[in-house]
Every structure is written in C-alpha cells, then in structure tokens.
Image (tube, rainbow, N blue to C red; front, side, top):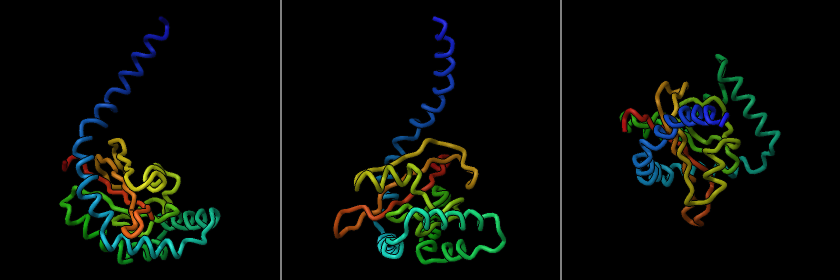
Length: 190
C-alpha cells in the first residue's frame, strides 16, 4: 500500500506522454507509408546511398568516431569544410527542395548509409553518425518493412514540436536495406 502513491504519480507523469504519442499515430503512420516511403525510394536517394556505401565500406569504428568528432567540432566553428561539403552535395540539395515543397510539414530530412553515417541532409545535424540511435538501428538493422516513429518532442534544432519518421532505404534490385531516411514532422502541420 505504501507504493500506491508512487505508482499513481508515475502514471500521472506518463499519461500525457502516452496520449501525445498516440494522438497523431494514425497520421504519422499514413505519412510513413506514403510521402516518407516515396522519398526513401527516390532514385536520387538510392543512388547516393549506394555510392556512399562504396566509399565508406572500409571505415572502421575508430574512423567513424573520428568523422563524428570532426563534424561536432565544426558545428560550433566558423570554418566548416566537412559540413559545407555535406550541405552542398546533390542529395542534400534534393532533400532541401523536398523539405521546402512540404510547406512546413517536414522540419528536416536526412539520409544515412549502411554504417549510420549521414549521406545527405536538408538541415544541419548535431552529428554525422546516427548508427547509435533508434532511427537507424530500428530501420536499417531490422529489415525492409521496418519503421521507427519517435515520440512527440520539442526539437531544439528545428524549434518545433515534432516526431521523426524513419524508414530503411532499400535497393530495388535486391530488396535489401542499404541505408535509412529520417524525416522530422511538424506536428502542428498535421
């Protein structure tokens, strides 16, 4: 009986989060199956991921950590050669156009390779390696039909209330995941 108040307090704290997560679930699932799936299957995305996988195939964990450290240092620097190269590549430009065409629904779009490294992105991310995060682990590692829809949160980088939808990027010739895509969704635009 002495744990009852603690259990009630826990449920009260958890309830708003549960209702927030479920309130837009249908809309988020629909977006995942339609607009985000279309982006994941875009020829521009597939070609860029296949190319990046060839280039990053020999990178080990130490090399990936080194790239991530360089990226994180550049985020707070005036000189940003790695970030500039990423943001100006053709995939990043394609993703930026897709974000703009969404009319504010998409807050960010980024594509990852088979190692979890960003290949292209519409907005600056705080790191270049997503391989330690659910958005990559719950999609790329779990197969072609997997998806990850994050909880609804205030996102500091985009300054919106958003959820992230992540799907694997699949090679159409083999049916095998070759990377992943994450799209930030502005909940206020649903």
